Image (cartoon, rainbow, N blue to C red; front, side):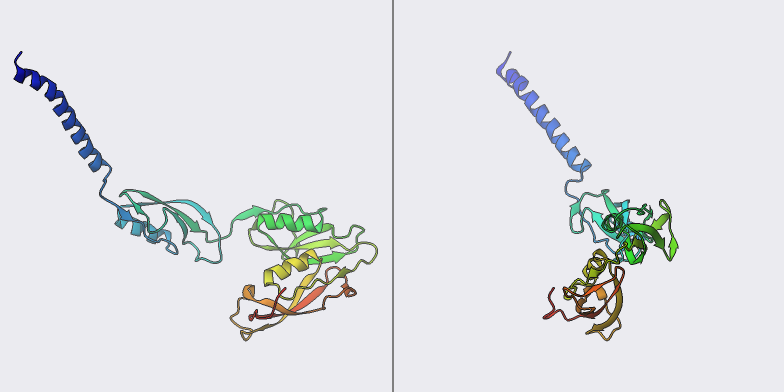
Length: 257
């Protein structure tokens, strides 16, 4: 065997392997579109139709994977997406969307009767329901739930109710004419103040004033309690279910809990 033929037999497999590797590398680059990338747009606040149209124009796809309900975003619009806006992805990629539902989710009303007030409030908070009012009637068991009302009428357990709705708790007044202290809610935010009053077996009475906004166009969730009546004190006791009136202010300067 000549030296040239021997060299050919040695080098030929190397050349063939190199050509196969090069062809595979080129094919892989075409298949994965290595140099092609699209920047994911911000789809939040867009309707599903707008989001689908925007993505399809870029060669991307949309898929809704979940829905939530929020008052802070327009109904029927995108509230979250994956991948996030600004990320670079390959063409033909799917962008997963979370939509804001047009209506709150429906859930089953829990059975609160015979629970304590604290237990009932805790169950409602976990489910996403609220306490609009607490009514008291004579009963040996103080702060035991005697009935549950929705829009002024009894609501049975397992009845369908929208998440975020408010219910009224009818509680026992006890046998000894119990009276409860008035908590100091001055400086608290609106939602915190209502929660403290509920736990103290009291109801929110009048919102007498919202200082700093002319009593119109205000978001009371941002206000704080400047004054209250009755005022708190060690000897200031009122009947369970009593009302506490508040004066709110949008200026939190000098107003601290």
